[in-house]
Image (cartoon, rainbow, N blue to C red):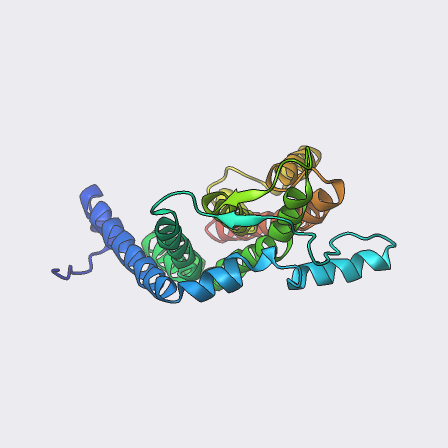
Length: 279
């Protein structure tokens, strides 16, 4: 592949920008493919330890939640032998192979996330002021930390609580829980990725404030509506259990409050910049 030469962003045409974006996407995709290949090679560890981890009674989340709940006089999350009464099965000829491929790709996206963010930042950074680039050097680190915090929250909190609830819920003793492998993996993947994206809320608010779509006053004014949305969101991504929804809603509300402060900081910094320029 021919290596393109760097151009001044101010002199680049629309097609030049598209070409630039194409190369960023190619490099990001290549990073995902490389990590996905490694994940596929170590697929036994990926599935036995990580994907199916929340299906084991001795999973660390169940033990931790059990200890915490006992402090408050409850029995939430306490799992004994035979409590997770279900099996995971594959009913399609290529079911396990497809599961290995798509799970490896999902693992590639999660692990390569910092590099994907780095490529995204390289694409948008030429359009920023020099001072903005200076203040935003920690963007990749902060975005990656928030994403991985969300991934860990989804994996160690949302997934175990959901698996525990759905595996113990029965409409009749005649019905046996035999979950399809695609359904189980989809539960883990959607919970982890959804939590990872939700934890990027401060970063999203930062950019929305930068382009003028959001202000701290707006966020404060509609805080009560945000609370309702957060509770609905918690109800969607968790089982219909009040304590579980509260566990999920609390960190999201904390992120919302942090986002208000970030928006305030961005607005104040922009006002100082305009004042220095005489506006």
